Length: 123
View (cartoon, one colour):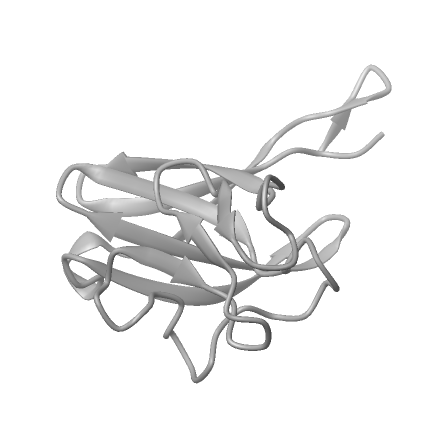
């Protein structure tokens, strides 16, 4: 939505918190006013984070199969193509060809048991 020449953030309910494992991850395609956005949500205890589904090294999707964004220990986000490891809490790449880079964050909130992502409007 655009008001006064400025696009407002878009809220999208993506799932119920109970559909995310703990720890766990799940991918989504959200249809925003500016087009489709591929993203994923990760959960570990009280931590809830969301990122665009794009490796900073080459832009490929991160998951190795649907909704599998975490490594085998469920401790890190892992790029299936390069094996890069990212911290869950901030998307910082600890190891791999994009070491030191960050995944692009998406604002996420927990509202009455629902996982809500906020996409920034363009304009």
